[in-house]
Amino acid sequence: MSKITLTTVKSFIKNNKGKIFISTLNRFSGMTDGIEPCNDKGFYLADQTDPKQLEHGRDNTMGIKNAYFVFDSRDYFSIYEDDQFNGYEVSNCIGNFILAIKEK
Image (tube, rainbow, N blue to C red):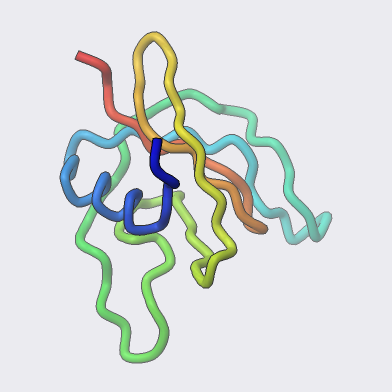
């Protein structure tokens, strides 16, 4: 199996627009200055738009609400599979989340 990269995940997002579900497992908390587990870790259909073209910088959500990519080789990817969903788990210093589509 080939290495999962940001390009792999970008392609997954682009090719599955409107079909992506998200599960946020952990999120950064300014109160503790660290990552905290989320209460609701269930999957829900992602609110997805086209990535914004910013004058300076880049859209770290890649158009998906509650997803946050750090870029510059600071995101870590792994395959996610369960009985209902297939996709990718993304981990970084902001937290970790799963982007997946329903298995047919």
